Image 1 (cartoon, each protein chain N blue to C red):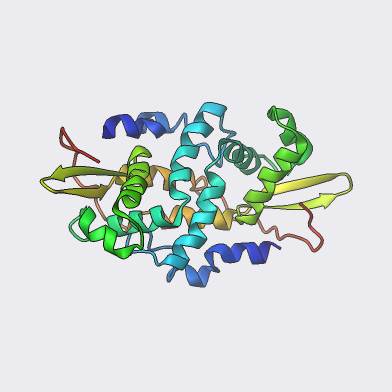
Image 2: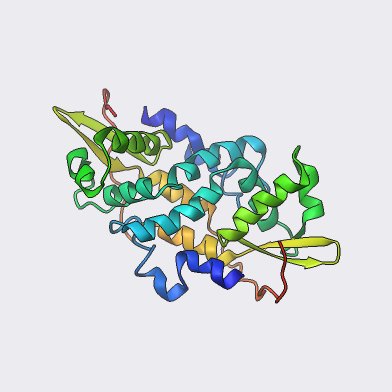
Length: 135
Length: 135
């Protein structure tokens, strides 16, 4: 499961050809489609809160039973959001008896952080938007 | 315009309280809502390709007239996607005569990279998903 989902952004040896280029070279259509799935999973407030709760938990994992009470949402809705995060390769899980336990896949957040990081040493442009800038 | 949009993630002095905590502390509802808007803007293949084309352009800016031919989409559709990236604070623009020129707002991608970066020195967990993991 997790191996397949991690292929969304390729294994680490693919990253150079794929997604490290977001800020350094134009993405092709396939690269953009794969990467957009992961960002789309992050583009929802409930999923971001779930991810932050899972990622910041001491001990590294969270029972779904500890996640649900923080939201005014049904268990199936929470499970759906967790499924989307898992399909994006951002979290993984294990069922133990009644409950499912979730943890962060740090390789994926590391990868996203990497593709959003400018090449080393590149300064911020001094540019500022002039008055009257238009869309 | 750009100042207002950058408030999506707050100024740099707010980042500590807001978004650097994605992996280190649970986000509250307001923080998650603001941050989700930016990730949602990235959650589309066309917008990711546009962003990568703008970010990687030597000279730091791109005429919209150089972006449109790369897509099998109408000019208004491209402009709509560019508007969403601009509203998310990821790019900014200036009109000069007939054309609009776009450039990356690197402070925003830096900020996203920062909130997706684990605290310094934190090792990757040795964890692997066991067979039979369930959703």
